[in-house]
Structure formats: structure tokens, C-alpha cells
Length: 370
Image 1 (cartoon, rainbow, N blue to C red):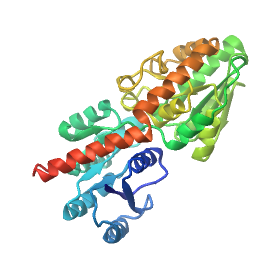
Image 2 (cartoon, rainbow, N blue to C red):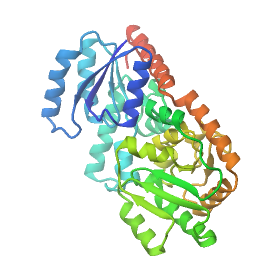
Image 3 (spheres, helix red, strand yellow):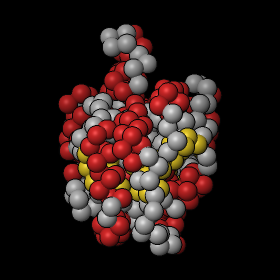
């Protein structure tokens, strides 16, 4: 099996890394037909076409990685010429992200309309659309008219590095102040202000005796979070700027408890983010928001702890309970690791992706190309 990863994408992005590792784990050849993210329009397409000429021989499929909406039309043209179906892994809707989640574009504006049209075009032109959860798949179908028969659910999973760190992770002390870590980009869907509110509640009740919080990353809501920490005079919260991926995961591996997402946006209810899969692959207990998406993969109080979205009081109570019960933390971390290995390891992701490629190739051969 020979698969081309095509477009202006970041090969180190966790989702893309897991898909590549998954294919390679099963002996597939992955070729990169790639230009840098942010390459200028026009030059981007020319460079991709030139790279295609030297690497496209014998392709079984073309995969456009996450956020590559603009690259699907060209991938479709080249893929059809080569007889190779095109799979698109959008991960998110650009329109939904910019309008609904980040609020950067006004609903009904010309820019929002163009972005929505780009989403619709790319999703419809692809022969197969990957979705990380069925909640996301349903959104693609209802908002953009994607035929549900060409949706394939492949979770974001965790890469080999996360599982290897988990194998090496040393046993942690069962007593003392709980080391709680969040790693993320401070997006609205992350709900980081809920974490700060929970930390404030715990500090009011217990001082510094229950938990310390380390938040790693930077992004849109960081200035607000910094103000909240300063205004509250919180001594249990430490904010660390973005660091290299490997360093961030190594720090997370030393934690007692990992935090997922707590945002209240519709998009937050449709995703199970990398940080949840990565922390579980490390063998950490995780607290994150309740949603139909996460229920597709994991069970509350067995694999992780779920709390209502945006509910700082519930998050504080969950942390208190886990701080008081180290055996439960260890049991949950072990169960989490097993569950993620079964559903989100590169090996499992590779199986799902190869099954999807075989199915869409069979459909194409039978003359029902979508």
C-alpha cells in the first residue's frame, strides 16, 4: 500500500503523526507531497503539482491531512488522473472554528460565507472524509451535506512517543499535594478559565495542601487567564509558555492528574482532543468535560472522570476526590492506558485507516466513485 500525504501541512502535528505511524506500522509506504504551512496561494499549488510529478507513481490513495481544506480541489484533480482516491481528514470545520468557536468572523459576513463555501467544497470533493468522532461526522453531514456513507470515524489517538513515555513512567508517590497539569493552546473550547476557577475554589478551602496546577501553552484566552490568576492572587497555579511537544509530554508524564477540556461551545461537545488521548496513553487519570463524543470511547469513573462543561465547582470536587484516593487514581490510569491502546494506538489507527482505503478503492473500482 502506497499513500501520499498531500498539501500544506505540518508533519509534526499529532493527528498527522499518528496517521502516518499507523500506516507505517502495517507496512504501508507513506510519501510526503508537501509544502510549508502558509505557502502563498498560486505558488503553493505550483509547488505541489511539481512535487506530485516525482512521487505519485503507483499510489493507492491520497490523504489530505488536517486543516488542508484548500488543498482538496488540487488533490482531487491529481488523484483522479492517477486513479487514486482522495481521503480528507479535516479534523474541524474552518467555518465553525472561526465563527462559532473563536468568534473571529461575524455570522453572515462575506468572510464567513467564503469559509463555509470552502468547507462545503472540500468535504464534497473528497472521496472519503475522516472524522474523529461520530458527533463531528454528524455535524459534517447536517451542515455541509456530506453523504454519511463516505464518513469514516478514526479517533485522533496518541502517537508512539506518548505510549513509550507511558511505558517508562515511574510510579508516583501516593500522598502529598496533587500535581495537576494541563497542556493546550488556550482555545475557547479548552475552557481554561474553568480550571482557574476550580483552582481558586480549592485554594479557598484547602490553601496549598490539596493540589498545584501547571498550565502549559499559549493562545487566545491566555491574557484573560493571566489576569484571573493575578486578580485572585493564586499561589497554586503556575503558567508556563508553550514548549516543544516532547518536553510538554515529558512534563505531563510526571504529573499525578491531567486535565482535558471544559469549554461550553458546541465544538467542544463534538471533540475528544489529543490531550485526553495522550494523557491516557501515559497512564494518567484524566478529568474532562462530559459529552456524547467522549462517551463514544470511554466510560465515566472507569477510564476517566467526567464533569459538566464549564462547571468549576464540579471540577474542584472531582480533584478533591481524586486527591483523597490514590488507589482510584492508579486504577483509573491503568484502565485508561488499556482503553487508549485498544482504540487509539497507532496500530489501531492504522488498521482503521487501511480498512477505509480498501473500502473506498473497492467502491471506486465498481464505478461508484463519490
